[in-house]
Length: 167
Image: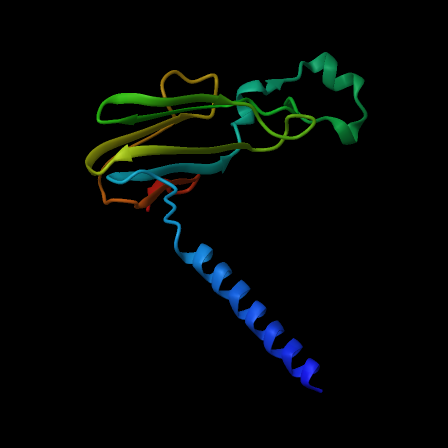
């Protein structure tokens, strides 16, 4: 009986010691995912390139060779074109990418995800995107003044209907 009590007390002490060690290492080591006096800017969105640039009208001969139920006047390539994105901070371009479409056939959307560390303070941020290779310049452009705080995570997103959103 006395041996059993000793085992229970010893087991309780070992359990408390292990719990204390785990609690210490769970809270004591200070870990930062970004340096002090910096903020995180994330450019994150999914967008499909405009397929209309690769469409062409079928000729009368091509249409005549097809069965009546397959006589679409235009034929478009299944593959989507890549999108081209630029991000400029304070007038300096810091990120450029020509992102191909996803999927085995290249018919899915292009996915952009980039993390950039910036110094805290006010910045002028410009995002430009071209989703149609037949156009010159950019199809979507947005410039905003943002005020970054220390260790802030700031996100730039894109929706076709509303353009770029900063939050």
